Amino acid sequence: MRTVKTLFCDIGGVFLTNGWDRHARHRLVTEFGLDRAAFERAHHQAVDEFERGRMDENEYWRQTALAVARPGSVRVSDLRAFMRAQSAPLEASMEVLREIAAEGRLRLVMLNNESLELNEYRIKQFALHRYFDTFLSSCYLDARKPEPIIFQRALRILQCRAEHCAFVDDRLENLEYPRQAGWHTVHFAGAPALRSSLLELTGAAA
Image 1: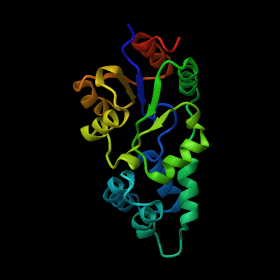
Image 2: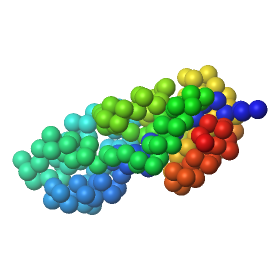
Image 3: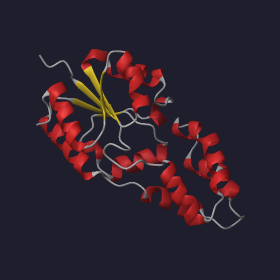
Image 4: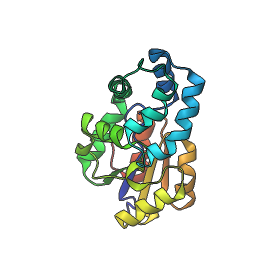
């Protein structure tokens, strides 16, 4: 009997490129001539509030890029455009997602760490509402993976049991708590392996 009824999925690094990882930030400091070490320090001071939805994007840029740039040398509109330009689909994985959604046998839930404005841009830009039934992002739940509370809140919101859930993520540290809590977990290692793992768990992707 198929026990997995709800599939939770990370997005960045699985179906899309990461939204705002260290590689994207390194490209930003090169593009805008910022001090890398200073920007990274500022980012790490701001990112928790940013991804929890407690800080909007304008404030993030004020505390990071604008704080380390020469006055007047950088415009927020250019920073915003650069951030969004880092997002692209991972086509092989997206095809697996389309297959799962077309089967219609699983409730699909997005469970990711992302800041509010970027998250909503990515949902709209890549039409993720076509595939996912529910969006449980860090900026909506005021919690970030791998914190146990984000997984606990997800189960309470959806009123589902851990043993009926599977979670896909590309980072092993994000899989540790759900695995211990009784979820089925899938470490993303490419589209073919993802398809095989989901077939084994659910029969939903052939």
